[in-house]
Amino acid sequence: MAHHDITTPIDEAQARSWRAGDTVTLNGTLFGIRDATQIHMFDHGRVPRFDMRGHAVIHTAPNVVRVAPSAENPAGYRPICIGTTTSARMERFSHPLMRDYGVRMIIGKGGLLEGSQQAFAEFGGVYLAIVGGAAALETTWIEAIEDVDMDDLHPESLWQFRVSGFGPLTVAMDTHGNSLHRDVRDAAEARRASALAIFDQAAEA
Figure 1 (cartoon, rainbow, N blue to C red):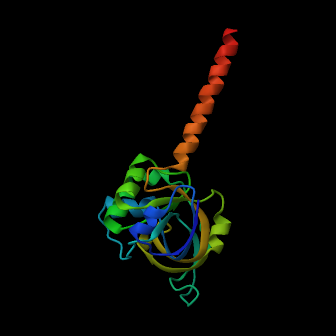
Figure 2: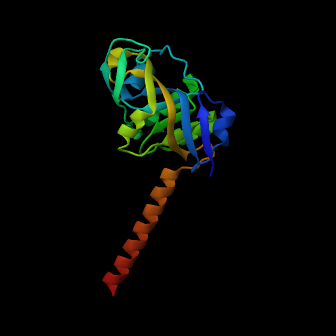
Figure 3: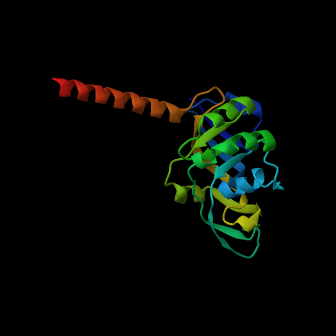
């Protein structure tokens, strides 16, 4: 297992070189995205003005406060708490995010499903897992909210964050078909089957 300290954007070769279990720390630009953002993009045909090729998106609807634009808060928003939401609801958007917008990294919690795993293999991308409940810590990794698009969907706008030392995050799904989430599920199911078998044997005795 390796650690990758990277500045976004990255290329396909970088993404394909990572393996499940590796860790990644991000610097540079990170885009915040959530359900409503992607529904408008892919179901209603709204085209964002940001270039997300090679970048990471994080599943979030941040808690922010509106302030006067400044060098510290160029978009007119100051971050209060920027946490990560559960990814599974957004499973159907992984493929078009990568195909249409060149996204390389998806950050969330709870994992994604087989369709996303296939998209990672096809286009060269990874799922980076973050520990749930770490919003206060995540917020310290965000230097500024640099820009915002689709702000009529607030807080499920499309956010452009400037980040430094964002991580370490765990490569939970890679381009080679590996998934830590699937491994945990399979191990849990095997232990459950073993426990039930022991219970059945005891009941028959």
